[in-house]
Structures are given as C-alpha cells and as structure tokens.
Image (cartoon, rainbow, N blue to C red; front, side):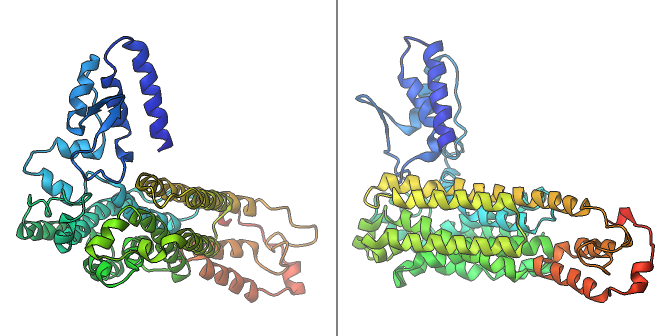
Length: 449
C-alpha cells in the first residue's frame, strides 16, 4: 500500500509539471487506477465512485478519462483485466473473484512459507514449485468462491456489498455455476497430479473443508477458524511437495500459526459486515467478540508468534528470520492497536495490509535459509586443531572425526532439524577418545568438508 501511494504521488507530480494547466480529472483518474487494488470494502458495488472536489468519476470511465491527458494510460489492476474481457466471460471471472486478488494472495502465501522452509540451506525456493502452487491457489480460491456463492445466493441478495455478485444478481444460474465449478476443480486436480503421491492424498483431504466452510457461518460463531483450517492447508502441502512427506515438528506449528493469522485478518474483515450479518442471521467471530475484539486478536497474535518461533527452532532458522519475526510482531501490534472496528474503510485497510505482512515473512524465511550457508561456511573454517591433536579429530570433541561430523550433517540436512542433529550425535557417539586415535596422523580430506 505504501509503495502504491508513493508511486501515485510521484505520478501526480510528474503529470502536473508536464500538463500544467490541463484538466485535472484525468490526473486523479490515473491516481485511482494506480491505487485500484487498495479499494475499500464496497468494491463489489458497481456504483462506487472516486471524488475530487464536487466531481465524480465512475470506475467504468477511468480508462477513458486518462486518455484526455494526451497519452493513453493503462491500469494493470486485476479489475481492469476483468472489465476488458468479453462481456459473456466477465461474470465467471467475477464469480471466481479474479477482480479481487487479495484472497488468492492470502491462500497462496502459507504455501510459499512451507516451500521456502523446505528448501535446502543456502538455496532459493524452487521457482517451478512456487508457480505450480500459485496456479493451484488461483483455481482453488475460485472454486471456493463459487461454492460459497452457490450456498449464499439468498443471503447475498440482502447485503448491499454482495448483491451484485453474479449468482445473486442472476447473471449466472446455479447450473452454470456448477459446470464452471467442475471445470475449476478439474484444472486444480491437474495441478495436484503434478505432485508426489503423498501430496496428492494430502491435497485431496482438503476438499471437505473447501465444501463445508460456507455452511459454518450458519452453525457457529467461529467460521473464521474453519476458514483458517482451509486457507492454510498449503502450509502442510508445500513441505510435502518438496520433501515427499511432512516433518510435523515444522509443519504443525506453521499450520497453527497460519490458522491464528487467519483468525486475525478475517475477524477484522468480518467487522465490515456485522450489521448485515445480524439482519440475515449469519454468525462470525466479529459478532462473537464485539467490544472484546482487540483482546482476542492480541491473544491470536501471541499464539501466532509462538508458533513461528517454534517453526524457526525446529527448522534451524537463522538471524534474518527472527529479525523479520520481530517486524511482523510490531506490524500486528500496530494493526490491532489502531484498528477501528466501527469503520469499514479502516477494517478493509487493516485486512488488506496482511498480504504484505505475509510476503514479508516469506522473504524472512528465504533470507534465513540463505544465511544457513554462511553458518556452514564458518563451521568449516573454524580454528586449526591444537598441536598434538591429529587433524582429522574435532577440536571441541576429541576423538570425533571432524570430516565425518560434517558429512553426517550434510547428508541429513534435508530430513529436518531433529533428524539432522541425531545423525551428527550418533556419529560422535561412535567415535572414542583413545590413545590410538590420538596417535593417528590421518590427512584431512578437505573436499569432504
């Protein structure tokens, strides 16, 4: 959001200098295009406007207005792409929320955390795997939205923010939506089949959550918890896709932290609709917490950060990871402290900022993983063995084959922190500090280090 605002202000300043004295409605229309992805909670409505002075510019006219500046300016926002599609296709694109990518981001980000954590020390996350999961997130989010709108057709008609959704507005029938859902799930299955058998079974297990989540708002005040279970399944699947199975000492705390994160941002989101929810008779954590929302969100933040610390310990993460965790904690604290639960626009801004928070954590994991290579290099370049002690023996553990320790560490680095430590300790236990070992003068195999 900050980057978008800075870009917008810079653009405004440049255009003012180039087109001094021209009609400024084009300038503010361009500004709105650049900030299009940060719209408020009523972005579903086709009558939303951008005001400057006493004038108003309809969203459908934004591209047209920018042409008055002497050059054509195109918005790269998702909504503009959807609006430029053929008229017959637009309802289906809006049904899968292609014009509102924030949900896709929030589904995709836990996958990136898990993939990055599963990468070998010193290596970047596998780009092909990130691309595959990005495609899957787009398809599964679309399928989930389709299922949700099919269940909530009657409810959506009664809420101003959702009344324009394609099924509620009558643009798409339930049968057409069902056929479209089948197509999305078929493509998602194709993505899933690109993974290993363990991941295929694990991914298929999430379908029950995808189908039943929309019903939870009718049953319990905790539908956001079920959404957390659904949206963060990628925290398990990403690791399994890279490693072939889950290391539960890493995956479970990561999954738990993701669920807590979803409870934070989706409770904030739910406060936008709490009045309409009461009218139509659906439940949410916003209605459950009410005036105690900030207390609950603070508790979820503590739980989330505790889980992420456990992830860092079990995955042997390094300094950059923990530095980013501190930044994440500060962001969440500020987000909760400044939240106005009775201001829908503020709730939307706080909710949308979680995309950047999730991406920041991903970068912290990547940086921490790259830092591991530096630590291994320092370990290999440790001080020379004291005189009288054979070069093949470890300085801190007499009698332990130094090259063997490193070899055990390297061979087991992909099996998780716990297994790696066990392998190294087992090698040390098998070595004995005997006079015969100290008398050996075995040359050091530097390549094995």
